[in-house]
Image (cartoon, rainbow, N blue to C red; front, side, top):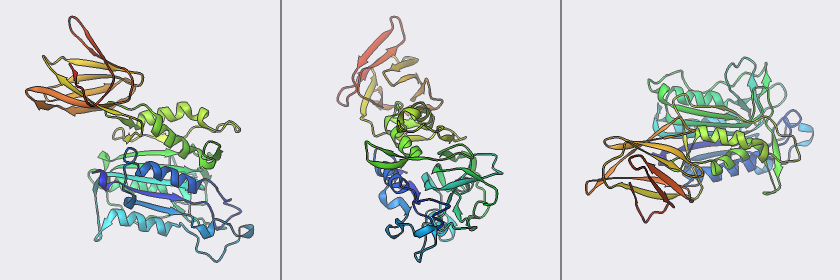
Length: 369
């Protein structure tokens, strides 16, 4: 259920160790930017009450002199994250499992362990100082959520550096090693701002007069602009491809563009995101004999729909996932609906002769097959 989607969003701009971890201007803007998308009904569609925001408080925005610790409590720290995580995942001492999605988002200074053989990262906590390196291991918590299957889908976004650390282990997490029999069915999709030992970067974007992390800015733009499927969604495969294709173009021109983000696809299949593009619900009705298949093409779509007894199955040219849509039966006719962008579309129906129907999507008229 969409109402059960949750998010923990962490943005750390100031650190107790201000010399080792210099002040950042991007994280607070990053959090606001990603939360705007998360709470949009056509974007992440997460209720504002279901988003836990952990950000640098106002009284820490001005760092103490010479990076020395101040009298204030340095937060967000791992404890704050653990409380939010447990509030979502544990109820009455037991795991609460939801058939929905969890977003875990991090912006600030980060690292990866030298021993990592897969993509992993942690965010340094705000109280990192000197030899003490407390951290929030984002990947560890995402993997734990998958292992115990507390959500059906998990999206991990880490807009932080992945400097290799040999003396900074990932912080221990407050969960046992229980493994659910449904763990393999959980989809975990992850994006990192860089490859291992790479640097995340923040830049000022003149069009918005604000500093953003490049990953966050590019991610939201890709979510808004990427081509949608026949249900008006952006698949994680399309999102990843679109972001990397446009990465250099979207980076501010005054700097050489860094390497594109590192993406780890979900091994249980694509994850689909909402789109804030203008889309129209177009109805279709089969008037006569059901054809074996139809082809739908437009500026952003190239898909084949295969008819079954009770549904139509769509496969898009550049997307591996199948989309199944059950028919609505009315007056003996089979009906279905697609969510399409504006502009001219062509539906090709095989036969002798072949038929081609060209239409502009709209909600008021059916396209008759």
